[in-house]
Amino acid sequence: MIIIARVLITGASRGIGAATAAAFAESGYAVIINFNNSKEKADALAYRLSSEFGVECRAVRADVSNPDEVRAMFAEIGDIDVLINNAGYSSQMLFTDITDEEWQKTISVDLSGTFYCCREALPSMIRKKSGAIINISSMWGEVGASCEVHYSAAKAGVIGLTKALAKEVAPSGVRVNCIAPGVISTDMMRGFDSEAISALTEETPLGRLGTPEDIASAALFLAGSKAAFITGQTLGVNGGFII
Image (cartoon, rainbow, N blue to C red):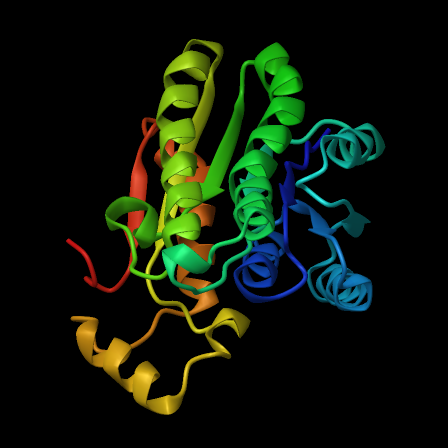
């Protein structure tokens, strides 16, 4: 009997998440596409990937910042082999303008959501003594960004969670790694004008912005057997923006 590995990707209806879903589907994984608000996009993506690659793809709604919804999602989907915590939220503002609500929303989605999903995924992985968790952080979680203190703090927390959890579950055969993307061309760049985008491109030593597919390729590598001896690491996919 052929056993098909199953991957859950949070925030997968567009951008990095959608590209990652496509990469895993193309590689033969059964893909579970988590979304919160973008049901039509998620359903369309699941249908396209299933049709194109002949694998099981389904879309499942849950707000990852809500622990009850995360529990319900895992009860619905069952065991998974790979978890990719990609769902995120960001905004730019001066530190003095960050409201309690904005702080809580950022921490709840970017950090608490990662914690909630890891908590639900791990019992079956530990029981099977295999599994891979990949958390999507940011290069700003490594070095911090002006006017993004709340986002930088949340993403730094994701890196710390990754390192600590990797140590704890390694004896159970579960690997936990982190990807820290640089400037990636996604919907999150909509607020930047052409001058700002040009400046970011020039500041990137490889001379271009990253693509969602760049991150998807890194996630596919970290999930697979070629990364079997890699855990607790933060892989910077940033074109040399920070070194």
